[in-house]
Amino acid sequence: MSALEALITEFARLPGVGRKTAQRLVYHLLQQPRERMATLAAAIATVAERVNPCAECGQPTEDVVCTICSDPRRDATLVCVVEEPSAVAVVERSGAFRGRYVVLGGRLSPLDGIGPDALRIGLLERRLASGGVGEVILATNSSLEGEATATYLQQVLAGHPGVRVTRLARGLPVGGELEYVDGVTLTHALTAREELR
Image 1: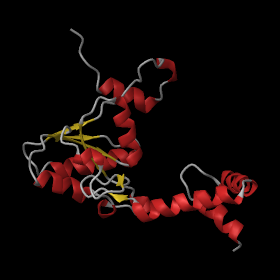
Image 2 (image 1 turned 135 degrees about the vertical axis):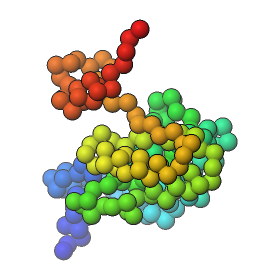
Image 3 (image 1 turned 90 degrees about the horizontal axis):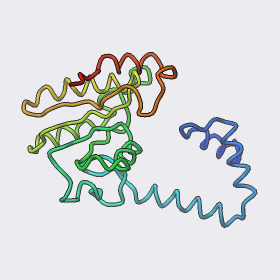
């Protein structure tokens, strides 16, 4: 395989990047000065060398423990479980959560050969074993795999009495119009409807 073909193949392995997009990216890089390609290659090599999962939550960090886990102002009694590090960034942008996280590094997907051992469930269990956790928020995606992961985690957490297990609310988006909502979202919204007083 040529160097060009190998790079296209590697780009195509990225999420959301198909073969045609990978080709466009590679050909774009080829039009850049060599220094630009060297800078990109060096940045990728540096990340591969320096960045590892946080020992406490699993999100990427250059330190042993990330800034969120080492922040004494964060509420250690509240743990939000997410599938990927990108979800941490989304929750943090909301400004509504001041607890800590566990990043699973994926979701259960038996068809893809991803079982519980492939996820960082051990980080959650260690956090619970250390004591002090009052609530675990399951913030997995509402996909079939995300729901299966949440159900599995509920079973794991059932062995920890005194720990409240919650799930992110699902339903209609704020500002959304009912006629454009898919059936699954509408079903969740109807099931989790609230009483008005």
